Amino acid sequence: GGVLGIHLEPGAVRAERLATDPARVEECLLLVDAGVTRFSGINNWEVFKGQIDGDERVRRSLAEIAAAARALRDALVAHEYDAVTPLMAAEWEARKRLAPGVTSPEIDRIAAAAQASGGAAKVCGAGGGGMVAVWAPPGRRDGVEAAVRAAGFRPVAFRLDLRGLEIE
Image (cartoon, rainbow, N blue to C red; front, side):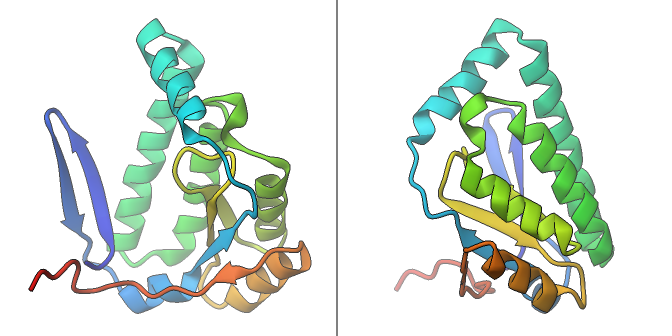
């Protein structure tokens, strides 16, 4: 539970609990349903195939995504929440270059609304639809949320689980 950094390592996936302020992350993070479903296998296949085939666009985009994720992790640990906005925006720009189906008109509208109000957005998962993570810098949540709503979308209420899975 908590705010986690997920590290993809050779032969393993490691979860790191980040020493950041979960309440601040909850304050800044919105989850927005794009209102469209998608078959993520197509996007995942395009990325997988591009990596195996040596597609420089895909490889460069993956490297940029990894760099943005590492920097975003560092910003959260350093409690530099304003720094998350440009890092999330950079991650999204790189992710959109992975495959044509990563974004959609709906996702683009959410991202544009977030950006116009001082925030940033990126799709969760393989893209094409589903959920969009929106970051509102400290003190800007109301404005970012209002812009997303004005664009025709509703944030989904959520809470960070600080304990994680418990099995009885």
